[in-house]
Structures are given as structure tokens and as C-alpha cells.
Image (cartoon, rainbow, N blue to C red; front, side, top):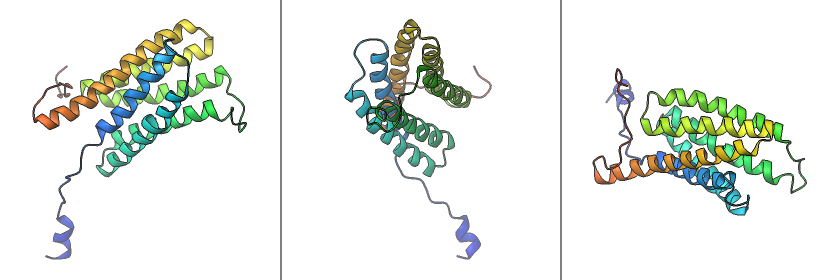
Length: 201
């Protein structure tokens, strides 16, 4: 086999789908944080632990694996939101450690607003993917903008509404996670995710 022919050989990708892991990390952590935002319990070490390890590190691992699969959307989403969770926990814990001053509500508002703008762009990308991801990213856009509005205005009612939307967002990600796993295991569609078909709405 000459050099040119060797370059043309393609190796089949037999690695597992990393998306369910990323969706699991995002979904569970989002649910638990937004149960707090909805007023069911205070911010605590459980949420922070989930933010670092499940929402954070697990999603980053999934993002790196998506990068290996040449999936720019998945790599950016999972690594980006994974580091979002780590940054959020850092914003909560660094002041308690005496490393930095606590952020003012308006400053956190800008933090959340920028993530909302990024997520809006990613939502546009999901219009070429599937319905399940459209629900996840669409509700996540609403969540970020509502949380930013809460921090800018100090209106806790907005935060409560955001919390319930966030719970729905998290469960939609968990659904997408389980759908991909179970559909693969059973070799048929048990939980539909609604693939996008060009020309159809």
C-alpha cells in the first residue's frame, strides 16, 4: 500500500456516545440547583459538590470525548457548561475562603446574561439537531435570562419562576440522556427525541 492509499484509509469509530454522560451531568445538577432557586431548600454543599464533579468535571470529560468524535457543537456545549458549573461554585466559595470579594447581584446578573446570550446562539444550532435538544436549550435560554433579571432587579418572584423553568430544563436533559441510552440498548426508539428533517416543521 503506497503512502497516498494509506492516507485514504478510514478507521471506524467504535467508541461509545459521550452525550448521555454530558446530559446526565447537566440535567441532574440543573434540577438540584433549581430546586433551591424554587425555594425548596437552601444552597448547600450537596449542590456545590454536584456542581464541581457531576455538572462540572463529568461534562468536561464528555466534551473532550465529543471533540474526539469531531462534534464541535457537543464539544463546545459540554466543556463550556461544565466549566460554567465550576466557575459558579468558585464564585460562591472563593469569598468564603478569603480569596476574593463576594460578587454583587448586578455582577452576577452580567455573568448570567452573557451565558444566556451564548446559549441563545447554541439554541439556534439545535434547530438542525433534534427536538429534545431544542427543548433543553430553549428552556435554558429562558432560565439564564430570568436569573439575570432576578439579579438585576432583586425581584425574588422572577427567581422562583426561573427555578421551576430550570427544573423542567434539567428533567428535559435527563430525558434526552435516557432516550439515547435506552434507544441504543434496545435497538429501537423507546423514547423519541424527534430528529430534525430538512423541509419539515
